[in-house]
Image (cartoon, rainbow over all chains, first blue to last red; front, side, top):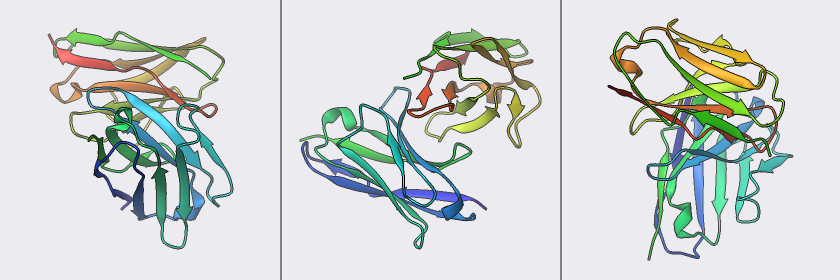
Length: 113
Length: 107
């Protein structure tokens, strides 16, 4: 069974950094592009970025470039999203996705003082 | 970046209705178009890929079509479990972009 489980969310102060993780199982992690998508409360889906199976290439939405960094550890079957200088607008549920067919349950990040 | 214009934003409908949601791409995306269903508090679920292909486990009342740069998701006979938000996604090139969503609700 394919599973993706995000963790690392919570309440963070504006300007802080946060690293989300997505641990996967049930498939060969190193074979797949992986993506991060977020959804602000009551809003639509927003692509954050993606990473190549071997981790050698990343692509980001223009609005995410510079503050968000995607990485992976294929030995640990884990995808990461490093968020820095977070703002209130980053308050959202963050999803990891395998290509586009399987998604995690999401993890909530709230940026507030 | 490729823009996806989705309509309508809200679609009141009755059980048994045939409903259609549309996305228009600002550039050529070929058949690199996916449709997702999302229910409250849940993750998105892939419904259609390659513009017209039904994802695994999706009921046959769902279908996808393309006419030029317009892509449609049709539900042939609405059931209560279909009430959800629907999003299109262009997966032709990064940055990938979603439509703004359609809320399908009971009239």
